[in-house]
Structure formats: C-alpha cells, structure tokens
Length: 201
Ligand code: ZN
Image (tube, rainbow, N blue to C red; front, top):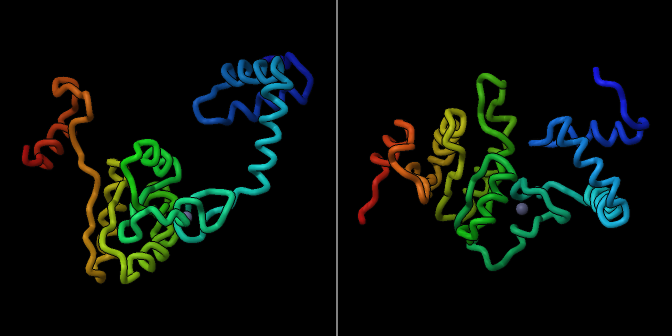
C-alpha cells in the first residue's frame, strides 16, 4: 500500500476519481492535481455541476434514458418519428447513436442484456415497458441496436420473440465492415457477418 501523499480530503478525491471508467490510480492522481491547480476555474464549477446533476437527474419512465426531466428531452421531441423505436442496452449506446445524428426516432433503454453468467433475467430489464410501447397503434418499426456480443444477440432474439404478437417490422443494425476498414485486418466472424449481410450496390 503506497503511503498517502496528501491529507484525507485529497486522498478521498483521488480514490473517487480512480473509480471512473478509464482512470486508474495514476490518472486519478493526475486529474486530482489538475482540479486542485485549477480550483476556481475547474474544481468549483465541476463540484457545482455535480451537485446540481445529482439533485436533478431522473430516469425517464417512458424510455429509461437519464435526464433532468421526465419524460426526457428525447421523448418530448415532437420532431422525432413516433412510429420507430431504437432499442439499446444502455444510455451510453443512446448517446453514441445520438452523436452519429443518424437517428430521428425515439429510444428504449433496456438497462442491460440477458446474461446467464451474470444472472440477468428478462424481469431485470425494461422489457415489459418495451412490449407496451410496441403495442401502441402508431408503432411501425423496432430497431434493435444491441451490441454484437453473444449476450446482445441473445437479447435481440428474446426481444424479437416478445414482440411477435404485434405486427411490427423488427430490424437490427448491420454487422460487417466498419467505415474505413480494411478486409485484411478484420476477424473471420466480422467477415462472415459482412458477407451474409451484403446489400445491393
Ligand atoms: Zn424518455
């Protein structure tokens, strides 16, 4: 155990920062030092923003997104197609898709994927609310934007089965060659998926 280099308040700051994804103890120390050095311009506004966020953040009861309002900003956006739902595993996936600007529909956040190994069963996910939304008369298409992992695909199959009763188009994201990708660098699984999901040119 390395010796503490600062008082308990700073050590606590470092320990908390080290819990952030992508930050180890070393990066956490660097981040903490940067915050301390920029106390007025960074540390204080960050502390403020975090306090406000922790007080106001709510989970959207409609789609499972996080926001400071319920229904969330996306669910309230009249400009989005109400007939299409994009199903994602987590809010991070929703944010990633929003960054692309390619989605003009609304979302449904499952809050995880089915996993026998981790003991995640259907009742642990926001599946009932998805089936309820899918049953709305205006709904036409459900896009399964789930990760191309074994658990993601198992979940995709389960969701498809759950939606069978409704007369909906269920689609999934294409699997294959990434934009700018070179075939020689791709693994066999990706190449097989790319050949199988080829499209007319
Ligand atoms: Zn929402």
